[in-house]
Image (cartoon, rainbow, N blue to C red):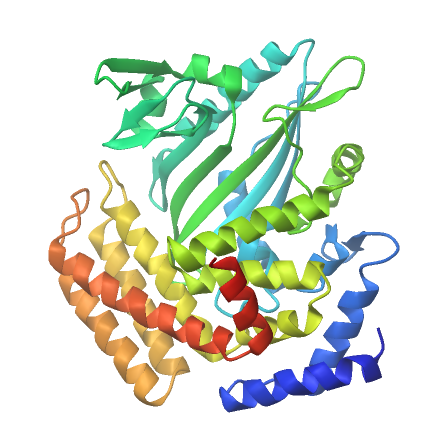
Length: 438
């Protein structure tokens, strides 16, 4: 793809961006379009020698090492340790953290970790996973600057009802911190009879493995949701690699934090399906559909569309979303972090205080004042101040009041409207969203 081929569709994007008040540097956009098209061929993995990080070439185009020390500090909390001869790990950034060059105001601190367990049998590998996940959860249960929120581990062997929600067999099991400590979880079956799940039994079908925390981030003056999604494999004595959940995740959106992880990454990458890209795009499209029809969040939908477009050759649409997330106005994306943290703070047994939540809100208000201008700033600040006022009367560990829920809903609405307006102004993106919403 050359500059002449790029120029016409890019000019249309530039004109649309100008109408929306989005500053799009034509030279920089052309440079990125050329780089991303070239990155699709040849060696897929790129290594930054200076920082020691590595990842897929397309992903590395969007990564900035500026916040690397910050993410590595959080990585100490969320990451798992190697156990010589038994457990090998490779910790990576994912989501907005892996795209820090374009994500001026990132949301959560999302991590992804490949964990390869060497053992004589698959059952022993499952038992080792259960042990290290429980140990990590207990070690990071609560501290002055962090709070474990939830652990995903295991799949329900039968249909159950949890908190009045009907879950089918095979659904992931969500463990609250106290349930992890107890090693058991009580639910009911569809007939209303009590049904007990034990941690050890859950290990037999580990399914989706993920841990979530809230972390007080003194460097940035706010709370951040940190997560670590695990892709766990079993390596037999013969060297065969088996994903414990039946699927080896691809590597299209990860930036690995340590060059020492290259041998493990290389070993596992050989077993990634040849259809991995198509499967990855299909999974992202399901999430886009969810975020524009059910759990409406146009900011999250935009991020997933960006990944789809840059991996499927829709580079001009990707270039627009790339610039959109580099705009000062996308500080509104930070509102989602505050919204989610409210839930975590008000969960039972939370160690996150209301004062920490208020400090987070104060920091966000100041950022909005410093960043936005005109009526947009006035309305967002008004809603944030209203939400802060309501939060000051809430109590940690108790369900949010109707007043807090109403104030939160107003903020969600204005953020969704912002992203919807920008996305639907581009005909190609609008058409894609209409197709996904059917």
